[in-house]
Length: 240
Image (cartoon, rainbow, N blue to C red):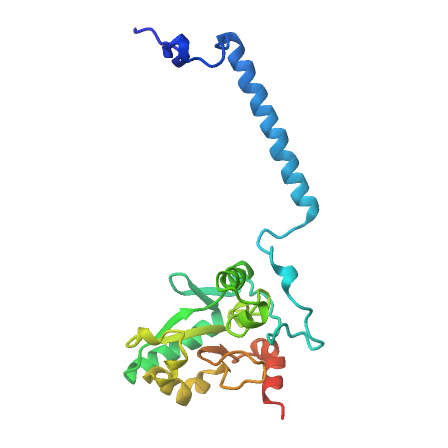
């Protein structure tokens, strides 16, 4: 069997910056380093836990105080859907089971009429919504008020409920998430038929919430639970 040599022994003496550590002490040195690292990591974890700081809210101090009716920058607050209530409609896109069934029925009927509805976005948890709000706000040098016109702050998105979705026209993907989506055959079909499946356009032109026009964003209101969640927004936007 060939003799195993220590890598340090292969370095010429002139290149050694420190004297070699005897082999019998190397194990003890490694053990001390590991113990010290464990103490540092443990202390850091303990301090983080005692501060009770969310790992994804470094910019929330920039947000204003919600209005008396609960709105923040025009958006109402919404709870996060329970995992057990969500079903996968397509890979990576989940909806509340009731909304999913209604959407699939609507999608089938639209296809029969020659319109291909495409599901672009569905349920979003709070962290996902945070990543859509704060990093983009910083990247575009926007303030919270400007960013909130096109994206809800975390905790205030209809997508949290599992009842809201963003739709596109599969024949015209260039219109995805654009105001010009309202020129597509998909939007024309939705305007005529979406109400039959209990879908409502959330942010029409000049909505009272002050959110930018989003012809692609629809919410499902086909159950007592969904109606209750969106009652404030519905009343606010239809008030005269």
